Image (cartoon, rainbow over all chains, first blue to last red; front, top):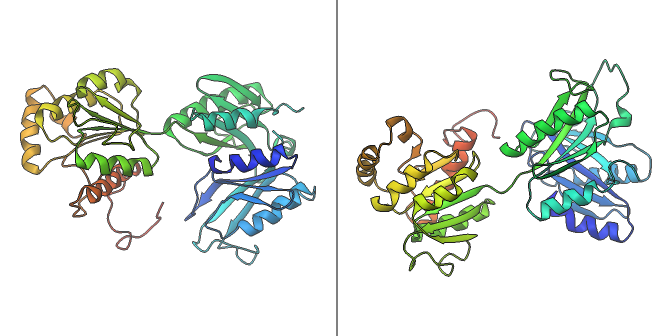
Length: 105
Length: 273
């Protein structure tokens, strides 16, 4: 989370709501370890990353759904083996589980 | 305000101050067979710090106590991962998934010997996130000017520095002895052996190491203790320059933490991480 603190502080100071997606588990190859995080504000601005750029676009979508009240906080999974079930996947062949929540704590 | 209010600020402040902190978050209930609905608990948080009061709650005081204890252990080891618990913190139950994100203190590398190799190794260690201390008894060599990348440059004998900081060294830390002068090497190794340091390496040719081994045995070190000393230091990658040698040393440190033999990935099979 270290690298996204500055952006989060700036957004919160400006009264923006913020969603955070954190890698909580990986199976097989995964580019980032548990704890890697990205933050998204209401306007879709992004800080940090949770993969090598493979799934960040989709995570922004999930974050905006969350901030828009169209989904709750919870686990979102991206994987290669399930590539027909997911819009995006990891080219490295691994699966990552993200916990997506609003930063209201 | 909810019970988690202020947790982000405390978490952020600890990370910025490089103080160890763990954030436990309930992320999920069981996949199947839920005996109760955990969804209202998802997102509940507990902030754990070794040197400050715990904040927040996961919704149950017994669960809080168990997760607090586990989080402190994970901080010591520097591990972030998902753990499973029963509703009241019971082990071997899968009701709740709790993600514990650990921000451990930086690992510490102590380098004995203010030589050219030290400069390259200190830079390489900084790249990997270590706090670096350079120590040499010779004050003309051990200067901040020669080692601007080091966090601390100490003019002292190795055994005296280790008397002061040896208790703080743990499994994630490293001691590298680069002096290849018995006068300094022997007290450095003798001083590091009783600590919990995860990696202990000593530089020198095989001849130097043989002679050093004789001195260490004379100093009362046992053969079993000598097994812990990585000497000659580093992996066999044919490195020659200080910079190449530094890569071979940090590569050996990584491999010793992960328990790998360090062959080529190309020649192996199975998982990379």
